[in-house]
Amino acid sequence: MIFNATGGGGGTGSIALDTITLTSQPTTKDYKVGQSFSKAGMTVQANYTNGATKTIEDYSVSPSGPLSFGVDHVTISYTEDGVTATQRIDITVTRTEIPIPTQSVQLTYNGLAQSPSWNNYDPTKMDIAGLEEQTNAGNYQVTFTPHEEYSWPGADHTVKTVTWTIKRKAVPVPTLTSSLIYTGSPQAPTWNNYDQTAMSMTGGEAKTDADTYTAIFTLNDNHDWSTGGHDPKSIQWTIAKANCDLKLTPAKITLSPSLMSTTISVSREGDGAITARSDAPTIFSAVAANTTITVTSVNKTTGDGNVLVSVAATKNYNGVTDQKVPVTAEFVPAKAELNAMSWKDIKTVIEAGLASDYWKVGDTKTITINGTVAGFAFTNYQVDVFILGFNHNSAIEGTNRVHFGIGKKNGKLIALCDGNYNSSGSGAGFRMNTSNDNGGGWNASYMRKSVLGGDKNPASPTAGTLLAALPPDLLAVMSMTTKYTDNTGHSSNLEANVTETQDSLFTLAEWEIFGARYYANEYEQKKQQQYEYFKTGAGKDASGRIAYRHTAESSAVWWWLRSAYYCNSYSFCSVNNIGYYNIYIAYYSGGLLPGFSI
Image (cartoon, rainbow, N blue to C red):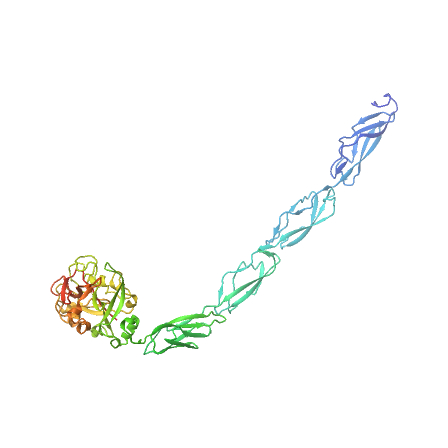
């Protein structure tokens, strides 16, 4: 055997392995479980009996594989010629620290079995026990046991119990879907967001009476409120009072000399107390007794008002306050000048048949005309109407009527004139016709339909006519009047051509003014009478028949009559500017002094 020996002679002889030593230590002496010993940095020297040495590399290390926890040294062995030398190297072997697993995704109750997933769970490094799928919300536990070569932080190698959770599912708080109103039958509320798999309810049972009730919603263990918390929720629900269906019969009342007192029958839902009062106690009284209200005139006073009926609220019905039954008391008002009385009171006196006891022919009342009539504008023009006669021609034209003329001012007749007065033409104006023709007589005339508008009911006058320009309170009491006139024209003088029209506003006829026939169909007089005003009143003389232009009251004008001239096809009768009978061509613009009746 040949040696390279330090301090020896290098020859042959009986030389044997004695020991081995480390001339340099290994770089690493600290290991984790599972790592293998590393020779890096280490030099091993063989020592012989003759003092010789040599560096060796064919030594062995034990243990030679992965290191286990608890190993505190490795042994270096070298054998030569049957002689083995060893050397111990102290090392440290520690476990590898691993984190304790945690639940990685929050689970929420969904009615199905669930199990968690984990952060840091590695089945090669640890064992898990106790993991089972769960359905209900709650906290559950598993254990983790690290393998021998691993430990938890801090070198903890104990079994760890870890809690995992299925969170309660959040559900909205129930709300009412609709309101309830008392019907007399049991009713239960309906709810938004009421989930019987998540909660139970008490207090939501059907009820009948109007009231406020409380429903309590209690969650099961798998749910929380979306607003937070788990405690039961108390929610009020209501059956509201129903409106009282109050019916009053009759719907309106008229008191009169023939009906001084009458009753109103009351029908209402529920049993609320009924009260009644008059809002015009100087005109009538109202007294309630059970379901009957007695309405009685007070001193036969004329006027209007209302019976105000109220019903008290009850447990299940709202009350009613001051439902109205209109009352009209139609009694004759006290005597007064015509101009001092309202048109409504004037009508009441007339209908009572007392007009001639209150007033006389020729009495006047001022009205205001507003509006454009056949192209001529009246703006707040005041003129007097005057009584032409009482019960005039009553067998034909109606009983209990007063006929009026329009108009007077400062005691003298006034004729309404447009800006084209005494001119011919086919344009708008106060003409009998817009062509030089009397065909169709009064009935078909432009004057009747387009100037006066008298073919229409006073309740619905035609715009642009004199009827539409009259004050509303007068229109409210005016009547349609039956008038007979020659409604053929064109040189007509036949009895059959004298026919009826219904007029709210009309011009007068020749016979009605003069009581004589000059230019009209001679048969008109069989259906007409002379007005008292022109028979015995101020208009009996020519001077009393002179009318003055309404825009120039010192200027006398001629004015139209409705009678067609019997001798030609283009003229109508008129009153001339000195108060006598005359005729004018149909398309001339003349003065208007129309009449009406109430």
